[in-house]
Length: 209
Image (cartoon, rainbow, N blue to C red; front, top):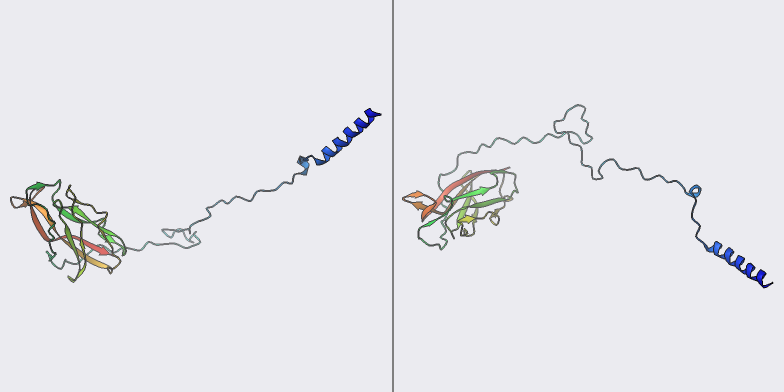
C-alpha cells in the first residue's frame, strides 16, 4: 500500500513539472520572415551631376552642370609704384645681424580668390620687427590695413595669426604694399648687415571674385 502511494505521488509531481517546463519551438512552428530588402545606394545620396552635359538626353535626374568660367587674370596698372605705408619701428638693435633669407613680406596663399576667403600675411624681416601692410583699390583708395606681430628670433613672421578677411572687399583688383625692416650690406639688401627700412614696396596684386 505504501509503495503504491509513493508511486502515485511521483507520477503527480512529474506531470506538474512537465506543465511548468519551457517548451522549445519546433521547426514546423517557426514562421519564416523575410528580412527588409537591403538598400543598394547611400542613404545620403547626392544629386547626380553631369559635368559635361553629355550624352543627351541627360542621364542625371538633376540636370547637367557647367562650371562657371573664370575670366582671365588681367589687372589694370597699379595706381603707384610706392605707397605711403608707415614704417613701424620694432625696438630691435641696430647692430649687424643675419637672417636665413633676404627680407620679404608676402600674401598667402593665393592672389585670385572668391570673396570671403581668408588671406594671410607672412614673411622674413629683421628679428623683433613689425611689418605694415596696406591694400589699395584700382583708384588708389586705401581700403584695408594690417600690422603684423613682431618677427621671431628666426626672423620669420608666422602667417597663422596674421589673418585678413576679404568679406569687406568688393569684387575687383587690389594692390598690396608693405613697409618692413630688411638688412643691408654695402647698400644692398642681404641676409647679413644692418637694419634698413623698406617703405611702401608693392608685394602683391590680388583679385576678389
